[in-house]
Image (cartoon, rainbow, N blue to C red):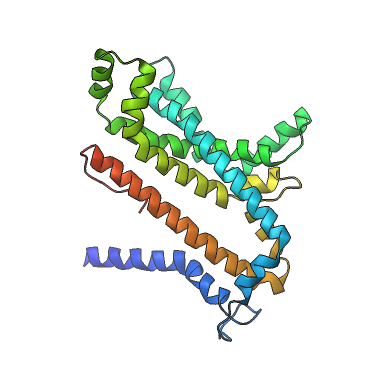
Length: 268
């Protein structure tokens, strides 16, 4: 009875949490500008309208440039940090790692305002590069968490054997370490890309005259007639985000399987 009640609670909680996402495609295909029931018919006009909005295209391009840059930068830095955390001992290691992971628990609005204040004090203009730096700060803890698991699951004796056979540390990393942690690297790239693409608060404060896609969508909410177009775009974004998470989970499980470990749960 107790287990059945907990299961019912979990189902109701998930239904409440994801009900708005389920409603997105319903209103995206609805032939009406009013977001309310009953539905007025089926249409693809709102998806077609996405092709006739130059401002939307520019915002999407900005978001893609930022997301790709953040994925590469955050994963590269996370790779070094994760390797140092799992392979080496140095003074202040717990404190340094805790400081790096701090953005996970800090409110994003505090981080965004702090970054904006620093830029204003330095006399620098906001733009795409400031968003890339802010998103990299936010995504690095996620990258480190993923890559730490990849390094921890790898048998360190493989690296030692390669060095004993005459390989340099650099060639050992390229030929032995990198292929073994590659699934974690791909998972980190996908997760960082998804987080950056969907992030709003930091982008809102640091975008300047170059809005990202979430910032553009927020601006469109002031116009009720544009809401169905926003719903159509939201449907596409949710679908792409789910696909990216599925691919990231696939590579995470593949890495565990390659290491001969049992899967104990992940993103999905």
